[in-house]
Image (cartoon, rainbow, N blue to C red):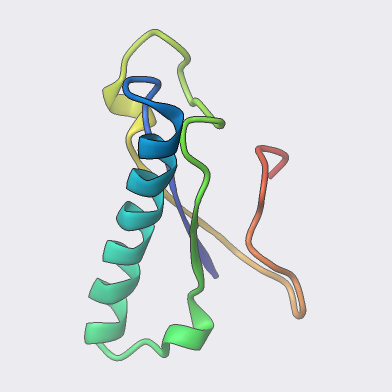
Length: 81
């Protein structure tokens, strides 16, 4: 499983990328504190590039998503998943 953080369109691009990575890392920390091996749940951030509801509401775009990974597959680096 991969943990992917997202940010709304508010703020600077570099800030939003960092924020989305911190969101995903916070969820990863929560899960590892409860016994899940960190190696099983990599995390990443995609900043503001994958807006669920562009410009309609910022709250829906501030989120963390989980993606099931197949053997050897890496976390997504774009919005194709």
